[in-house]
Image (tube, rainbow, N blue to C red; front, side, top):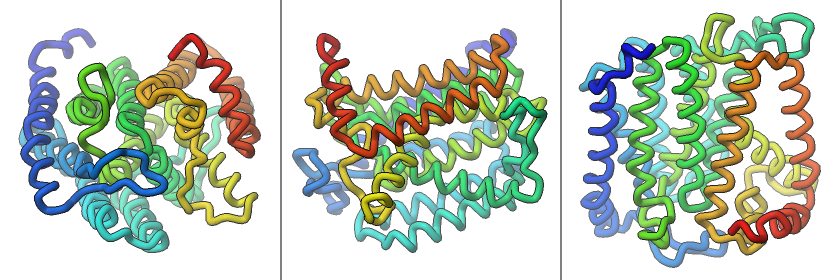
Length: 360
């Protein structure tokens, strides 16, 4: 394991980080000249038009540098690459002319099927979830995988509503995936994940609020958020596909749990209220922080920390020998609790106000 950790492995991620930082500035200027900007409206609270081209920059550098450096094996990753290109193109179009939700859903199904059937990526192994022995999805592995991919694409897309949030959450998720891959000796996967994390880190320089940057000057856009959801699904399945893989499926469920919790809660709340479950509103978990008066940079940090802690519970719980069934029961309990509280968003607002006093 430690032989792998030599200086040469840090070179491609360092180059990726530098390229994102360097290329953002000219492409941001070009986007403004061409009118490719996200303008404020009744749902979007940013004060001025911001270019939503972060995802295009991140994934162009990730894909090109992955091939050039030899880190990415195209024979294995071509279905992911093709799917990413489809999402990047359709997302870029959606950012400008707003594609109908049904068309976007069809695109999500298309890339999910491409990944499941052509990428040989199926969630067939679920581990000992219920304490009754290993669960295999069998003939249901394809529909289960397709549903999971579509859910994750939408989960990250819906979470992208606050500076630094979606990309920061994905850094936390990919970091746990990378740690698990390194610990298991799956260094090729760890290298690809490190490259992706570095690209995201370069983007966060312009998207995450900090003492030197009061507001984001670049957005992911639908192209970026949907592509991140797809990448999470890809690695989640590959790193937990059988008993010899680095992660138990329930550990993956904890690592990626927060975006799933929030999406399921919003869908339930909207359907119960007789609304379109895909209709955007300001009822997501991160919106509760704004309603509670928590500054955006603190809200992003707190939610990213929650995601990191959930990943520690999942990965660390299995590592120290906690039975998977215990983690399963706790995960389901937290999901149902989140759904119950989210039925009335003001409940979360009151809770956040109470616990944020003296912290933010």
